[in-house]
Image (cartoon, rainbow, N blue to C red):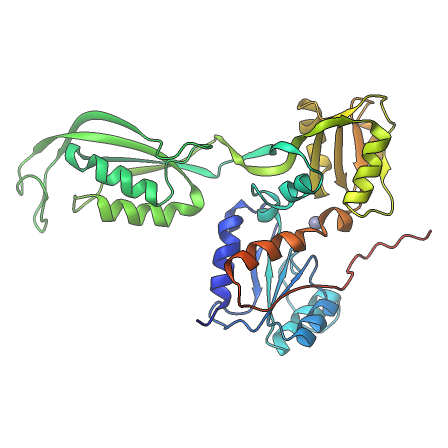
Length: 367
Ligand SMILES: [Zn+2]
C-alpha cells in the first residue's frame, strides 16, 4: 500500500491533535501536500537548511520537526534569512515540512511524559492542565433510540472522562414540535403540534472530535431534524496541558539526582539554584521554555523543576522553596526525535524512517 503524507499525519495527530497547540504556534503541514506519497521520513528537532540537505541525501521527502520553521507570515521569498532559505530549498526539492510542536508538548505521552519516562518517574500527570478544549453535546431523542445514540457517540470518542469510558447523563422530559410542509417526520403529522416523551442526553468530548461526534449523532438519531446544543466548557482537561510531574521510586540525595539527571539527559552542564539539603522525590519537568510553570511546580510541592531558557531574575523566584534546574532548550527536547520515531515505527513497519544526525543546537559550550 502506498503511504501518503496524510496517513503519517493522521497517526501523529492522534497522539497530538493540532488544536492542542498554543495560539502563538504554527504546528501542522507547513510545506507540502497531503496526498504526496512518502519516500522516507526524516525526524528532527529543528528544521533548518542543513536538515533539508540531510533529507535530500537520505531520500526523505517529509521532515517531521518539533519546532516549526515558520512562526509568522512570510511576505517575501528572497533567501534573505534562514527561514526563507529553508522553505525555498524544501519547495525546490519537493520536501514537505511538518511541525509537531506545542500540541506534542501538551499531549499526554508527549514531550514531557517522554522526559519523565527517561528520568524513571512514576505516577506521571500533566503539571498544568489546559481548559477550553472540551465541549459538551446535549441532544434530545425518543426514549427507545437512547441506547443506540449513546453507543454510537461513545464509539466516536465522546464520553471519555479520565480512565472512564461511556460517561453520559440521561434525563427525561417532553419534547414539543410541529412538522411543517415539506417534512417527513419520524413521529407526528404535518401541521399538528406533537408532544413526545424524550430523553435528554449529555456527553462531553474533546473539541477536535466535533465533526466525528456530529456525524455519529446524525447517523444514530432517528429524527429528520436533530435537535442539539454544543457548549464550549471551561473545565480543565487533566489529559492535556503543559509540563509533567511525577515521583521517583526512591528519594535521591540532591547532588546524586543532579548527576543522574546529567547522565540520563546527556547534559554538559546544569544551571541550578541553591541546593536545599533535602532529598528529591517529586520532580516537575517541562521541555523547552517552561518557566511559566514554576508556580504550578511549587504549588504541587515538586522538589525540583527541570526546564530551560530561564532568565537570571527568574531564578530568584524560587525563593529557596524548590530547586530550579535549567538544562538547555536543545538538550531538554532532543529525545523528542526518539518519541516521534517510536510512534511512527509502531504503525508503519515498511517505511524509511530516519532520525536526524545533524546537531542543530545554536548554543555551544566552551569548556
Ligand atoms: Zn522547544
